[in-house]
Image (cartoon, rainbow, N blue to C red; front, top):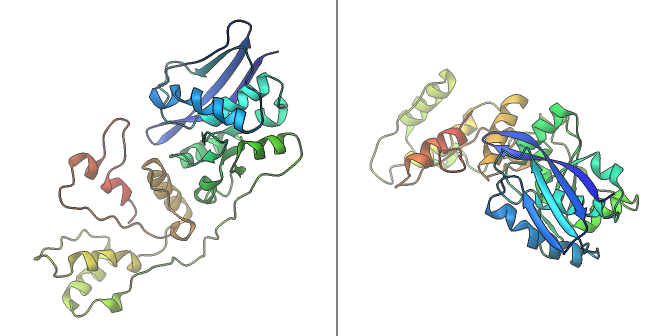
Length: 297
């Protein structure tokens, strides 16, 4: 029928908003248009999708292709819409069946060869997908950070052809390996590496035990950063709710946490010349600052 609807998620601050990728193929001179308040990276997806489809062994329909990202009043940013647009074209042109594709929300960037590249902010999409009761399909490299969400049905793919094989019941997509909550944090620093500084160590122990703030003052090279870097080792492991909150913040900032860090309190170090936006957050689109990144740490 030349029409397809693919579900995906837009990033709006710290939350994900449901977006429907509508693809319509109509007669007329061949053209490829994307509407629905797309910004530069989204408009450029036309060329990435075109090359990815051809190099993955599919045909780009010689028709007028119109892609609408709804709701149209929400600005769309980033390259996360490449994969749902490509899948929408394949479904609308009859090259892939609609039912398995429509049962999953998709997001990911496409390379020109059809490889699926990681995107930022997949954890908010995972949280929203759980609330909506929808499975999520993501780039393979994003699968590790989503393994923290134990209630999420998620699968990963490294290439567009892998999703096609799955849709045609000729293959399986990768599922994440869940990380147990009782896994001990893998620290790379130790208090035994700090010589002396007994009063400072004692002060930090008391501050951590009581949840107090600490100001370390001293000349360069006296050990302030060395001491601060080891403070998280005194803190208890994060519970599941805190770990998810921290992981969402880091995911939005483009600094996804590895599985070994999920339940480890974060540590953030500010460099000299740090701007106000870098410290408290800001910019366009809004990014978390170091204060937010150090939440629960």
